[in-house]
Length: 165
Image (cartoon, rainbow, N blue to C red; front, side, top):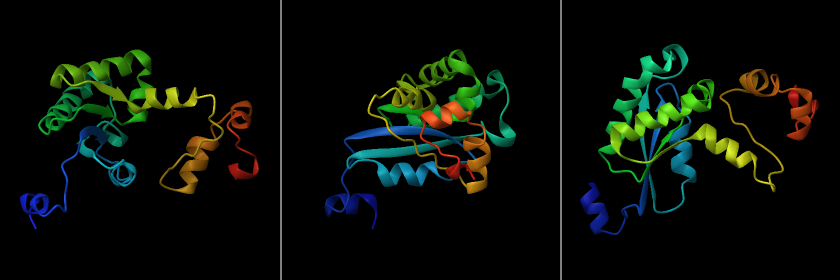
């Protein structure tokens, strides 16, 4: 069944809002997760960019790649573009993240946010009692997230020594 037939049959409704995600080309988790957990009526659209893993490099060298991915997303008219590569945006620092968002906005005219800033905002919610980090394997979770957590921060996050092994 094609989209027009599905819409006419009531099997598919057009989204009320659209979010565009720029994700690293090596990311295989975000697309299914966003589509699974998005509320009804929110369309999720994805473009990939080589900005992580073996393709991570200084921001000036990635600017064209980021702009191209943003422009591809702009073709489907999202209401917002999310730069969803925390490693790249966080490693650039707040000023670098601002530059990434400027690249997206300048290339598209569409407002943009980055997940790293959104994570920091979420951590400031007073009612936050626990954090769940999802990684590809338990070994990388222990090494990258829990193993690098200073003891004081681990305690504040509710991570016990037992859960660190």
